[in-house]
Image 1 (cartoon, rainbow, N blue to C red):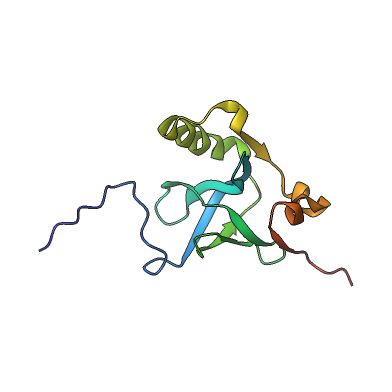
Image 2 (cartoon, rainbow, N blue to C red; image 1 turned 60 degrees about the horizontal axis):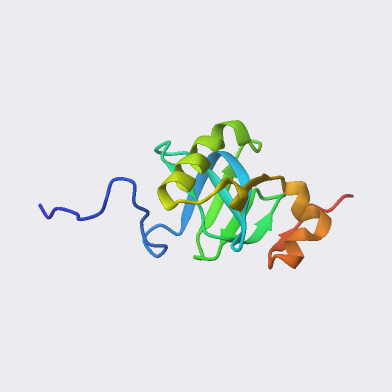
Length: 126
């Protein structure tokens, strides 16, 4: 059996894992990067910080990131639970508190998403 050189907390390439279910998620704004998602993989409870969100469909609870990966968001936004992922990411990469802030989906709805290069798809009202 071949041994993998992959670290236990590493992320598979998008072509090997194009979609990921994310639970206990939140939206964060990373200065100089844009909006990202933080949360936990539903299947393994492994923490995940995504690349920049480039498309967000609230009605389908899906987000597409710059890497091309699609995240299926499970449940409501949960910043308290996702904060551990954010803190770990900041510590690992030496990111200061001034460069990362919790964000809300409503910020995207208010047009900040367009200015940040995010495509929004909102549910239509009948």
